[in-house]
Length: 206
Length: 206
Image 1 (cartoon, rainbow over the protein chains, first blue to last red):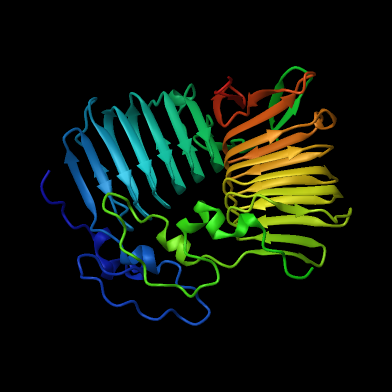
Image 2: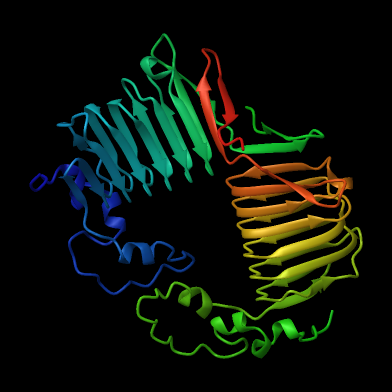
């Protein structure tokens, strides 16, 4: 796959958000003292940060530890390939053509836009993520994820959305005028005994 | 409430499980090297362990940081009181009479048995917990919890069980012969678009 070109999005002097963490490709410096009144919550995670990865590993496009990169594009895909994004933060990933599947694992504030997927789009252990399908996707899986916005296309309205242990999930359905209507997915359920079995209904109908 | 008597369950020489962590009421010692082939996963949590609490704080029975204590009994309760168990591990808590509510927060391998609750029994951020009601409980809430076994009584079959972001939940319903029948609560859901709205069904019917 070779080395990836450093785009403007990766340059810290052009992206203020990149400067919040330690600069990439530098040895870990001693932690600076936290500002008074501000807990140093991000410090341990930032100290363990690994260099970003974007390469094709056998049949898998590995996109890992990317920070604030809004121009990640996987263009040269085929039906046997998968995209696997891991621990990306504040990124936008575009995937072209038709491929097997896409997984976002432990990503935050990251959006993925893709054409077609034969198998599934999966979110696991994510926070504040978005997915937009331009063509078709048979299954969308949302697991252990808080904050997930799904933009469907007219060709993907028959998708099955499988959810577990997640919250703040919303699906946007395209209207004829090109705009979208938003629907919340249920995240809380009520179960009662009817004398012979338990019945479960969603409690958070919008 | 005064100091709690040290029962046999709290004594490390009578309970091998208590010896796995640092001994209570001792200054933190330097971490011993982990055994080869055994990851030192528990070390950071054990080092931060706090002394156990069991006392009435205003109207709240606080039961905190208990380890392997199978004889915790809250006997002198009334309708205005609550029980709040926090970060208890491998414990059994018995609550007598009728009180307002019971909450288990961040507890592991801990069981609670109680007579009657006016409001609710709540589990939040727990793992491998059990609850048994002998009388009545209007609502049982299970949130961010993995592994929860609920024993109902004949008088509590009209309880509402509210679940969110949880897994491995089972409810045991009493039979006429005194035995129980076990039912799994749904934890995974499938949502599909019907042309005008989304419909959600459980995917894991036993």
